[in-house]
Length: 404
Length: 109
Ligand SMILES: [Zn+2]
Ligand SMILES: [Zn+2]
Image: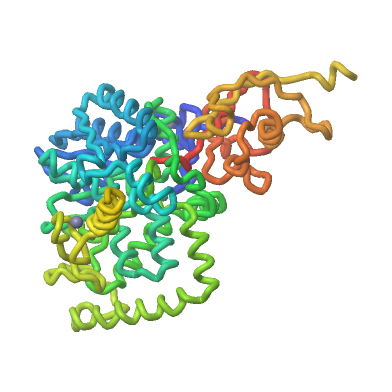
């Protein structure tokens, strides 16, 4: 087979076939176009403002490493005027973070960015090893995931930084869309597609500049730029990606590569059908003025190094549930609830079934849930006590019992 | 006859993105791949994958590398740094000194 030439420069040999449009590109053109697309997302969503201090949630993994690299380049190329800091979370699993933290430390030098590492013990008073010693290995991914979701916010607050960016990619978003669709959780579906989470009420804003970037291209970008990243899986969930929604996404991609972005766009479109929606799309198409918002608590949250992925066997568990026929009933109830609440809160503009493009949620009701703050820690929560504080309650009771 | 069946192609095979864990934590292998498969067909990527599973896989979780006889979706294959989709995928016939990289996108972000 004669080597194909790059569709862009027509001189170099094509090495990349882009999943989103099958364009064949050479290494240099691919790197350029990948960066420019992230720039486009940043500009069209108005993610940053000049002089802003931004923490990059850094795990040493591919996504956050690519994010740090691209943000550094764009910040210089387009003079964003950002002050970038790497923020790493240490879950306190002995041995588990050693290599990835070493990677982040090297990244800090390579990208000339300050690095701050905060531990679960500093944030919650518990390391994951202590959690496991208390509750056993079963179900601890829930703790890890819930703690992780807030860790970056709490860590940023400690540093006095109001904006955290994470490496969530298009595959992550597509996976969350599918999971919420299968759950029939329309409210969460609408929020999961947002590029920005957190609002004026939360102290820390979160965003995902790689939201439209294929995981495949992130890996290829890291490979061709020879970036230094670390691959691992959470040692407490060795089965992490078997039978997961992730596998389904990858199989769909294999059959038709555009499927991933199609699911992301579909998620955004469906989000617009949800009453009181504040979901997102690339703003240049939507004539929106600012990036819309969502609840940070809903941020896709998996376990360990699985940057924002659903725990692996969740899909299998759901499959079983579906066969048990319970979900069908629940689904109907949920939809009915969402419809009625939507109508209650906004009778004229927020009619069910009509696209709602200007859902400025003054009352704080988003898709049928009421936003509030955890009365313990102040983190955004739809309950009086947030998930993390609820789990901590249980843990602390256990510790008390053990000590007696 | 004996020398013919023993003829091999020298290639390098790299694993990254976490796949090295399935191959004894070794990222690079210098491999002498038989020139043809059992049926006498020229060695291609499909044959290499089979060969790797048979002789180099050091982990019971082979299904993290192959699924239903094919490379698991989510694992990228680069042939001399080019996406294998540009090179004919499994049917690509392996040449001397080729570099084949298997990189997982499935491990942590
Ligand atoms: Zn080019
Ligand atoms: Zn709380």
